[in-house]
Structures are given as C-alpha cells and as structure tokens.
Length: 202
Image 1: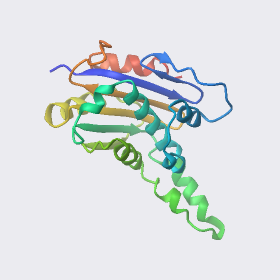
Image 2: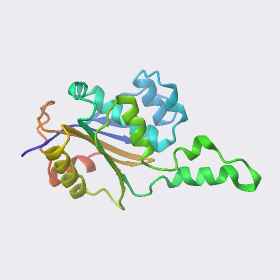
Image 3: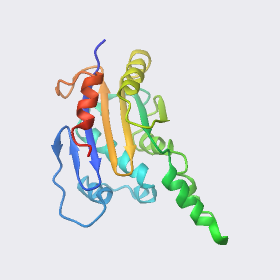
C-alpha cells in the first residue's frame, strides 16, 4: 500500500517554509513563534503559556492544517500524532529547576511542560485529534523510524498521521495520508523523507 506526504513545513529560527515555499512574514524583531502566531491571525490565549517546544509544534500543526483542508474531514480518532526529538524537554526541565533554586517556589506553569509529550496534548486538544500519539527520543532525525511507524499506523488504525521532528530552533513537520490529496506527488519513502527534511534544515 502506498502512502503519501501531503503537506510539510520547516520552522527555523528566523524563517518558515510550507510545502517548499517560504512564508512572507512581516519584518519584525519578534521571535519566530510570535511572528507565525500573528501571521496565522490566531486567537488562542493558551498559546502564550506554552514552552517553546510546544509553541513550535503547535504552529507547525496549524500551518499543515491550513494547507490541507482534508484534515477537517477526518473523525476525531482517525488522526495520529508521531513526534520525536533528541533532548526530550531538557530546556524546560532546566528552567523549572531554576524556578525553585535558592529558596524559590517551583513554577506550576513550567512543570506542566517538563514532559515532551505535553505538546502532543496541546495539538490534540486544539484539533480534537484523539488517535494514536507517540513521542520518542532519538539522537538524529530517523527517516526509517517515521516510515515504518507511519505505515503501521495507517495500515492498522489511522487515516492520517501528523509527524514531527522538533527542536527549539529546528522544526520539521509532515502529514502522511493514504491518498495524494494535495497532489504534491511525494510518496512516503526513505529517500523522499530525507530529501524534504534536508531541503531547508541548516
């Protein structure tokens, strides 16, 4: 059975690309996450409470969704989430540790994000996607892992899988479906995954 990459995006420290096309953001000194939030014209106050890992994953999901309206047609248990990164939630863990060192009070707002899979919860709640969700830790982007796990989920229980390799300054998300709904002509394969991953990652 052939599955297809139907949308993908890269979010870097100072630019964003969707399906190979650069998004024109307004000139600003704001962080890329705030620029993208404004670009998407969002009204989601909870966004500002998220840690950076969750923000970039959340924005990537919004960009994918906006470029693939077919996602709106799936039932809430038909979209799976498959994410990975090399450092878990280490940056937020350190910030949480600092919040109660030297007699300070631990920050509940930071504690929530000391598990990397919380970002999956943020995406799921926003979109009501309650299919399979997995977050793993890997030293490098592992195309073979995404390929095999995606194919397994699509063959057994999901109609679409949103995948993400996510670090604070390097985010790559891609959507895999059973049909080439966006006609990008990108069959899911090791070669194709590595090609589009490396396209904009610096």
